[in-house]
Length: 298
Image (spheres, rainbow, N blue to C red):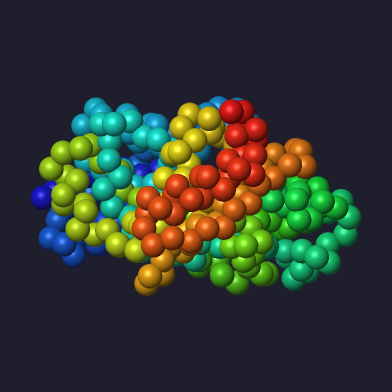
């Protein structure tokens, strides 16, 4: 089968699309990459949340799927809204890379050793909220752009340090830039962080793409997204939420964080269970018990 793979044009997006292409070629398919420049890529001058959030990157690739210009779209799963239109399917999840967040400080200084008021650049609401909760003396500033752009800003002194997904840095050969890693307990990763997802229309392409899916990563993806889906439409691009699942041989452990970007309140939950539904329900119940509904506008 000949498959047209839709992707954004950043270096990281192209890495992901090429990896999907490699796996599909090994499965016997002929592949072609189709690069789509989204509004989110064009508008680097404004906060992402004000123009639709990360879902904006996804929406325009989905429109290309609808128009029949591409057969599948490749995404960083953490960018995909928890609820996608019914006509689409997330048909495959590639093996997860390191899901942790990375601390990047040009002088090699640890986060605990940073001076009061040091400017820490990041774009994700959930990172901003978790940084504020654990390191209130630091000043967290929004920073946009691809990985190279952000690294350039910290080198130019426009901020004192960065917090980035380690998976993106590693995939682009930037491990040497990483000063330290946050544990998943310190900084709960975004749902889907480190996982590449393949989205298709619900048709015959789905079966072809499913063959390259990594089963444990798919379980983690369903659990993390499942917790968010329990909150329905209450979550948006401003929500400071994070969910991470660790899939073991006998049980699944889910860690979750719900907080306020600029406030003091936060809810954390850690639960374990044997099945996907059980761990999703348990995490949701613990978050609600801790007051998560008040933090997401419920």
